[in-house]
Amino acid sequence: MLITTSRKPSQRTRIFCRGLERTLNARSVNRGKMSLRDVFLKAKGMEAAWVLVVTERDGNPSGMEVYQDGELFTSLWLTADLDGSRGKKERVKMKKDKLHLRCEVDELTDLVHKIFSIPLEDPRNPSDSNLLRISFNKQKSRPLMEFFDDNAQATGPRIYLQEWKLAGDQG
Image 1 (cartoon, one colour):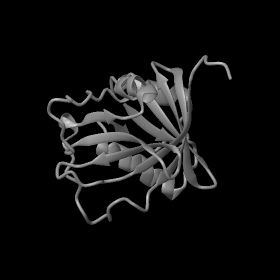
Image 2: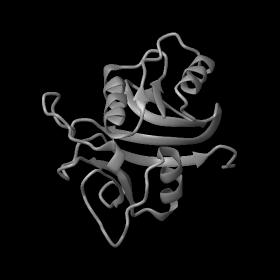
Image 3: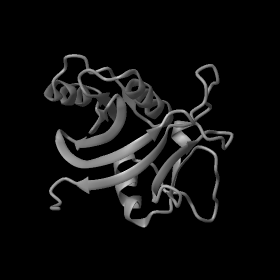
Image 4: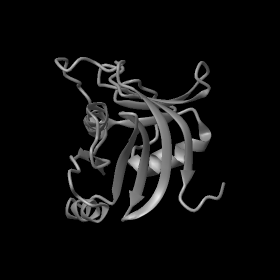
């Protein structure tokens, strides 16, 4: 997966993208003056079928447009909590090849599994290490995505999903 931003991203959006790169099997690149077509060509050169474009509002990450082979696949609207992330000096010990998904929001399981190519957790052998957990946050009444490192410590970013829509869905 290739992660990029809108043309002139804020520092918070760049930090968010680096956080995703650190936790997912993905590469984040600064978009600069690249057109979307150029981004798709770069992804193809990297043999990445998926491109995630992080959008922002008022200088904060506010959405992700996910493309598969150059075609819009889904749009996600979100609120990102970067303040809960670890400090820059602390190393995150994430084993990306061991990352697994625990999704407690049934309607998101297949979508997240497909986009990020993360295997689902084996219910017979649950583990909080190297985990992407999606749970329903009752306080904010929306799904929460959290990443946990090799020591089962939350690493950030924390992502509150507000809405999602597959390309071609009406409404």
